[in-house]
Length: 377
Image 1 (cartoon, one colour):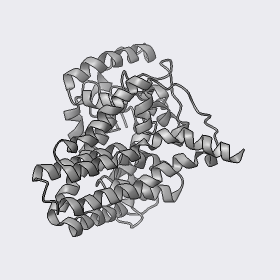
Image 2: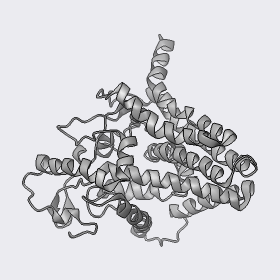
Image 3: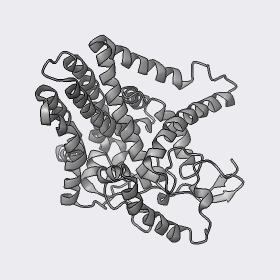
Image 4: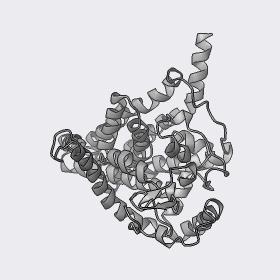
């Protein structure tokens, strides 16, 4: 009886482990070069789009009261990726910098593929880990973020994004009509500043200066420096350059997803700088089965913001009654976001419908469309 129960739990978790089939594709590209360099991006971005079409939507919900001991295989998934990604990045730095069969463009192509995985999988898993109460899991999340030089994402996400999502005070909430190529440089700058200021404010409430060693930014900087140093020791300056390529690709993918998740959605301003509580309707939801396997239910983002402490297998799917729905999964929507006219054609009518549906009493949306805060803080 116990064995059958364990087997059932493993089988239910198994589809989410498909991400572990992706690193071998990068290795094939590194050893063979040529068109095989495209395998990792093509499979990660486009195969799962095809699988979404085959498997359709998953609107079923797990019991949110499922005990933690029944989630062992799900928890193991995110933790096991950390050493795998570490070995993949640094093993390939050692190998590629010595690979005579790869041109400079070929070496770039290998690490573009590495960045696809460290962004699509690594940062997604770090997001799950940083939300946990377990210090070991949070530490593993820090290691994943350090591998893409984006450690401040933890502070920005937990202290700024979740608190101010859907308001002008959240850099990561994409404004209505704000194209990705305006959003991206803005969010890179503002999220770094807002995350540092949030940690500084927390220390100030304890009557400590920002330079106190309890500031997590010292840990962030130390981990990132160690990652760069290791890249240099294994591959010299070329190794550092390749490391930066994968980090840049990973960050670009993260911010593409951030752009999609809340585009044009805003919380109602109640006056005196106060906003309504976060609801499922303040994030775009996507029930596409295969891409949710790849992204460990990240597309159930409406529930994540509503109940941030839920582990990914317990995230609930919200229907059109409670949350706005994306027409496609993230693999398609992030590509659309790179083509602003296409993005606006797809999404702007949906934002306007969302406004009519949830906030028919608001006639002037101009203050909510601005990139700066037009309302009192």
